[in-house]
Each structure stands twice: as C-alpha cells, then as structure tokens.
Image (cartoon, rainbow, N blue to C red; front, side):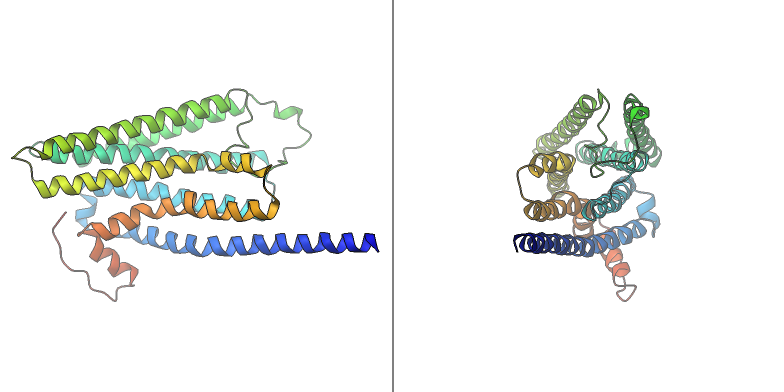
Length: 317
C-alpha cells in the first residue's frame, strides 16, 4: 500500500510539473510572437521610406531593433529548450550562446551612439549635419559589430582552454545557458569584467549626454522643445540600458535560486522573470519609438494594420 501511494504521489508531481512547463511555454510564446511581429514590422517600416534610410538616428534604431529581435528569438528558443528539459551538446549550446552574446553587446553600444547623436543634435545643431552623417553612422555601426564580434572570439578562445577531450561525452548535464558555457578557468572573470566595462561605459556616455542637454537647454539659443524631447529620449535610453543589464544577470540569478526553491516554484519564477527581464525589454524600442516618433507612428500603424490605415504625411522628427 505504501509503495502504491508513493508511486501515485510521484505521478501527481510529474503531472503538475508537466502542466507547469506547458503553461509556461504557452504563456511566454504568445507574447513573444506578438513582440516579434511588432519588431519585424518595425524593421520593415524603417526600410519602407527614404527618410528612414537617410536619417542617422533611424539607421541606428534599425541596428538596435535588429539586435533586439534576434536576441528575443534566440532567448525564447533557449527558454523553450530549458522548459522542455532538453540537454544540448556543448558545440550547439556554445553556438547559440555566442550569437546571444553578440546581440547583447550590440544593444548597449548602439544606445551609447544614439545618445551621443541626440547630444550633438541639441548642443551643436549647426554642426549636426556635418558630424552625424550616414557615412559616419555606417562606420559607427561597423565598429559596434566588430567590437561585439571580437568579444565573441575572445569567449571562444577562453572556452577552448577547457579540456573537452577528457569528457566522456559532449552532451551537457545541465540546461544550456550563458552561465553553463563559462567552463574555462578564466571565462567567468572575463565575463564579469567585460559586462562591467561595457555597461559602465554606456551608462557614463548616456549620463554625460543627458547632463549636457540639460546645460544646453538653459541657453537662450537652444530649441526648448527639442531639448525636452532629447531629455526624455535619453532617460528612456538609460532605462533600456538598465533592463538590458538586468537581463545579463538573468541566468546567474536563476542558478542561485534553483537550489532554494521547489521545482514548481522555480518554474513559475523562471517564467515570470523571463517575461519581465528578458522578453519585454527587447520590444521596448519598438513601443517607445512607434508611439513617440511622429514620423514612424503613422507608417508603423499602416503596416501593423496590414495596409487598412493610410499613413498620414508627417515631416516632424
């Protein structure tokens, strides 16, 4: 009788865990699909008119959105792999994580450049068109991707220090995550140092731009409305940067909580944190610019409504 009761309890627990996983997958996949649709539509919008292709801040926004969209898709793929309790091999997990790290680096660097562009637009309006050109913007984007790729290459070289040949199998014994790939002796130290330098640099640049615009706004020659919009944009960039920083600590936080909470509570917390910390911030740029920017909004709504709404002509920036 005791054996039968124990088996029944184990079966009930497994059923509850399975339902939790299915519910979590459905609850997260639906908003992810919606956010991906919005982001992809926004990307299409930013290539639909010459004004978007010929204005530096829209080109930078496209770069930011592209990185966020790829990051969102990869992040959700890794989430579903973890929820379905699938264990990948080290090469497959490493490839997915290195792509994720590439896009994670691009986002804060692009926010940094976008903040400096707003600073120049407000503080040096007469020189803005000569400093912030499409050519210079293209160079900045190439530098961002090159720096991000160099970071990925460094991580690969550090990963190769791990003696994989001594393992019985390349099959992982834990879920695929960025923390799980920090297996080299110096990988963890490099990861912490890089994230610290990256986000401190971006935070300083955005803060510098913000206070520079505040000082410029006091000048009688400065366009007050333009300065106010720039301040709001820079504050939003700072919020985005903080959210991206919190998403980099997502896996570390889960590792700490995995040994404290029960499996059911852990699955629920995992789902909640994933939506709030990892998924939602990647759609923030589309929501911010799609609603605030008077040039983007009518065109974006036209595409979101599949052409049923005619875009209003607007020249405001």
